[in-house]
Image (cartoon, rainbow, N blue to C red; front, side, top):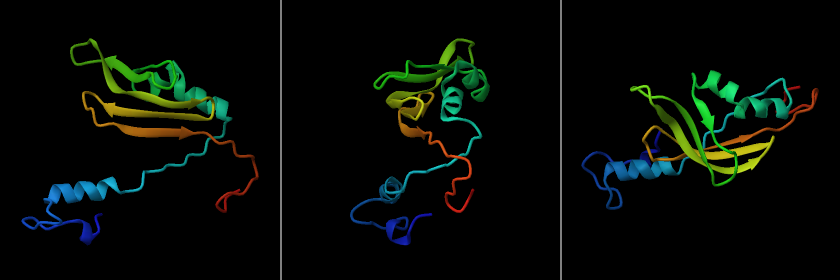
Length: 135
């Protein structure tokens, strides 16, 4: 997972850092994860699946999507907590919106404040158009 040159052995110093710091730096320099999905639907239909209350309740086991989908606004998936009171399972901030093409937001789980970023980009692909060797 980590190139040998990026990890110091326990007890060794790498550029004056301990093992955890060197490991963190190796993780920080990784490429972002990218997933590609193909849907047999228009970008508008897929967009609705990402932002509709009904779809989010199904996908996130009852959680409600709370956002106005405007850059700078909050985004949360809220549902019942252990005590039955509403709690944010996931929280973050909307970064970019260009419906029905682009949704980018930060997010963290529960009380965690370490944010990740998600970018959903919907691109129409004409039937029969070859891409990466697939029709």
